[in-house]
Image (cartoon, rainbow, N blue to C red):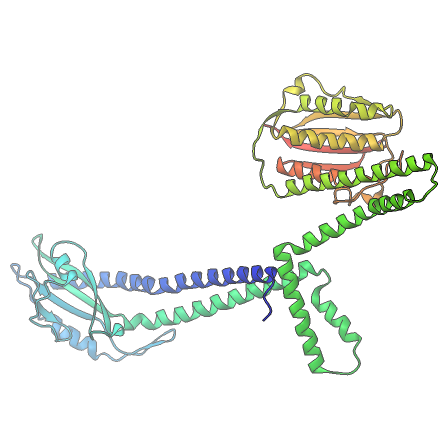
Length: 483
């Protein structure tokens, strides 16, 4: 039996969590329907109980309760004929129940005639009402049958400020139970339908994200290549494309496509220096090679090896940055001092090509401006921008480094005197492994420096931009929020 792959297990786990979450939400909502309906019914019954107690109080004489008026009243009420269509409920009779007890809890009137003379003093609605509190209970008419439950609420009967009895008003739960069942059924259908629709939408969006041209376009393109009408073949093709879409969505969820693209691009970048090293090594094995040629090939191997090492180091640094969501430790960083330090560090590389730094824009007072962040990372970011500017500047050129304030943000600008950024490259300069040939050497870098700077800027809540400056050259702008 074939064991599911790790990405399939992860995808199924995500799907299971989604289903479990929706099921738990539906269970909570459905379980909350019945209590909410009971609360609504109880609120109405409280008012009816108070009304009946007020009616009975009109006939209290010297503390004695007279219920003779209630008998004909409820006989006529139960005999009434009516037809009321309440949504899906067709109501044709009154199901309200009323009983009256004296101050000891003994029933002196029952509209149903079944409990007359019974001792109700132990029922919670009676005992609490006679004690001056609010009392309510739910009792089953038939033991073991939850559908026979009746909800009772009580109201006190007073005479001369003293409680001399109580009125209990009952309502069968079954009378509003149909509303509860209808509400439950509708919630379940709506919830299940919404969950299914969201799942389908997620599938469509995921497929659209991992396949920009969409399954529909692929399917239509395939149909155009077919001759004749073959329903079974078309169905099999659709099923195969659906399986591929689910697999691609699993890849997207687990990040496999990202890793595959990363590895593929890295392999492509490292292929050229490896080929150069291999070629030089094969030539070095030939007998009788002149010493100067041997030295040239050895230097070539060293240079390409260093290029691979730089690529690996940069990639590891960038990967480490991409996995970080926040800075582990932050501290105030004086931006002016940081830029002067970065310029001093890049000065030897600039001097080898006769390039000078123009740092006149760094006033002493602006060195007091601080950003909150990691000084090492910010130093690396500025260093990368300076390295880029040096690489693209002409021999004997000038690199201008400046810092200015823009509200509560510090704007670090690095400008060179090079040829600028071609129009075709402006949208790709921050992509990993993308690099332009240096004017003086016609060689490319690792293509990870600007991506590295972008990650650092994002970690600090800032931004990085690179474009062409007015009057020529490229202008890199690193914007950082100030402390």
